[in-house]
Length: 110
Image (cartoon, rainbow, N blue to C red; front, side, top):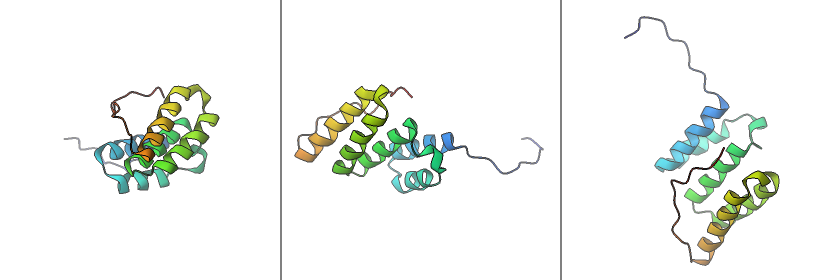
């Protein structure tokens, strides 16, 4: 054990997004919401934040919000077109009650 004094830890915005996505994966949605709300405004329009928001909405089963948000992000982040289209399709299928199983472990390029 180190005898060095420990100062307060600094949580970067990137760490908050990572933490939120981890909480979402664990089903700890209130904690994820708290992490996302603490992000500075300049991070709200980042691709990483967009993906975390969509994951959060999916975990809450807010399908119509998830679809609408994904459609907006698809225009804003066209480089992730495949991810957004899958997300839009998944939300639409869930809204119609025809949700197909999907691979939750899919690694999204960040």
